[in-house]
Image 1 (cartoon, rainbow, N blue to C red):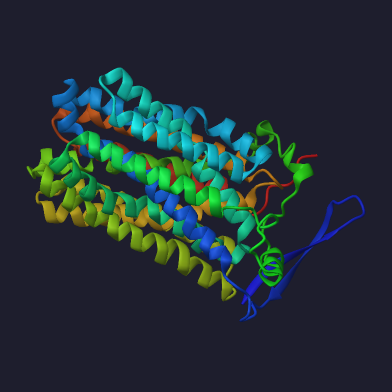
Image 2 (spheres, one colour):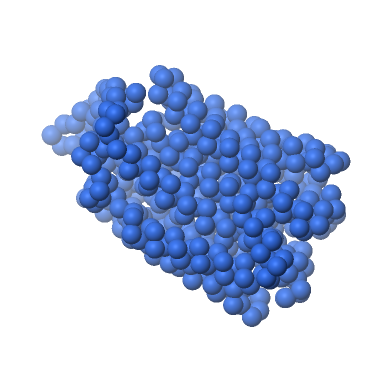
Length: 449
């Protein structure tokens, strides 16, 4: 059972009223839209293989280029410099030129960047490859949010978003041990070459299969009508030429609440994504081979909570008539609060206890993440999802830049991760306040005059 919002328009195209409509999915409606969701999910999986590859390469790069712990922290964040710088431009470009074209160009660029890292002969070349990787991958999440808005009814959108967001948690679970073992057996260059091959394979898949619903000749009329009647974002080519102005969105209280809350999540996410193997090695004296295997456990748990709690449960409760805004806010705030379990890891005296607390923290944050990424398509004015997604991810990447560097300095100064985890927990408290007091009720931002 899907409940949608049917808009009643005046002759000038302005909304006069919104009337709840209940529609039932016919059994004969195909499910091509879910193929699109899994395509986007595979892209994020490959995308994050590229990101986590570096986190298991510290010792190898130290021997190759002679880098210190602080230098490695800067190298970990270098990708995020260009990634963050291109968030706002990529969001505007997405709304102007569309998911298909921007996605193709971005995927090709990040494939080239992976191969460039594999053949780097010095720190400058390697740094350049990481910066190019950030440029290529910058449109990924805003593009996915925009694509899900086009392809899915409002009440299927959390699960669709969870499919690609969970891939960001599955990638460390699978990628860190796989790439770590590949590095140990064949060397760090082959681990980067492997991600380059996977990236090139995804480029081919995306080029062949991704179209917007209006362009997809394999999409049945029944499914097209079902998507549209369920409240999917309309494709408006005239409106896409302008969209809501960036300045207008930046003046919205809801935007700032969403950005602040999600940035706090991403700080902890990137702290664990980039430093967890080193934390286990330095604090609990686990060698590289075992640390990359233990690292997978929290990420597997996060993949599970992402899909089950942030995706399936949210959609199921809304489809059963629960207040959609209340359900999403409960998962956002509740999941982010569980992230404070990172403090338990700060006090942990054993590897087992540390992994339990870290799993609880990242599992809660993972449950909140797909809800957060579904919000741009739920609150953005027409044909402005890409721009709002770019704003959201810009804030995320400021955190992604800060987390590895700050953690490197704190760990080196204190010879411990205690205060690094404490700083992340304090930021999460600020993010919870942003969700509760600034974002508020999840509803569409009015169209600009």
